[in-house]
Image 1 (cartoon, rainbow, N blue to C red):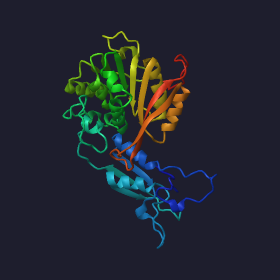
Image 2: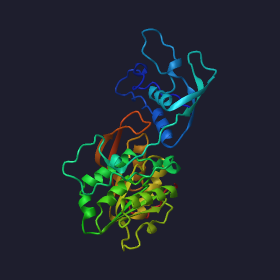
Image 3: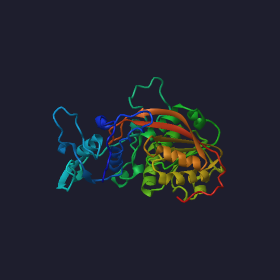
Image 4: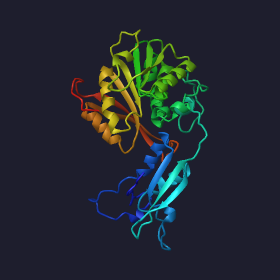
Amino acid sequence: LLVWPNNADSADNPHLCRAGGASRAPPPPVWDAECVASYLRAGGRTVVYVGEREERVAVQEGSPPDCGASASRAFQALLSERFELLRAVRLHTWSYNSDDLTVWRRREEPPVVRTLATIAAAPEEEEPTGGDAHAPPASAALHTPPATAHLLGGIAWNGARVLAAHIATRGGWAQRLSGGAETQVCELGAGTGVAGLQAAALAGPNAYVTLSDKHASLVDDLAASIRERGLGDRCCAKLYEWAVGDAAALLPAHSSATHFDLILGAECLYSLGTAGAFAAALDALAGPTTVVLISCEHRWSTAECLATLEDLGWCHEVLSEETTPPMPGDLRPARVSVMELRRRAPPDRKLPPI
């Protein structure tokens, strides 16, 4: 990992940020720690870092601390906390720099068992005041075995918890799902299925939820979660890859519906490379009256992903926003939004290459 440069930044080295007028662009955001956190969530085990480290930076007495001209202090703290240093190699550097090459190995961590109850709960859990007949059973653990824990979808993300809470408490979805009208629900990129399983827990006899993911191992885990909760009569898990999968096969065979009434997507907008495929999946699955609800943590790529969706005909409206505790490996709380997507253009347009 070559981080160069990530300073001067206002978070770690404000004394290095040059003062300027209103016309001066703000310093770039600190992004390197987020890179390492994403790498950790994806199962990464080795980091080779080239750059300065604060422990090797000498400052004159009375000067403010300086974490170096390469990586932020947040990056270096996360590296030291989650990895152990195996080797340091001296490098040729400029006379005023102190770069070296270091090799780091991930520290072993005890396995974490997540339950749907702990994930769908608010950050600060409170005793229920009136009870919730639709609350999922607290004893059913989400399936995140080693075979799938390394996948992005094998993690219960903050956005999934926020979307699940939105379905249960806002927009009248609890009443609609438990009501008498037929309601077909699909979760795209379900992963651990937190949002879709919440919808299934609320579902009445005329509502049906389809959880979909492109990884067969995650689909198997979703099917096991459905069985453990006794939701097999109103929920299923199917294999589906955005833009290339058979969209018609996602609709349940026992229904005459030609499209889904509600489409869910928790943390599906995480890279520009997937935004086009996600839009293509919406085009294939949504009808004129379909409601699309998504949640996403605000990252460096979020604005570009939303702009790509809008270019492809899907505009968004923010319904709610909240700050959530940091995910394991993150250093800062996350800002998560729930949005509704609406189609602005007909679906027969030509999509750009994905």
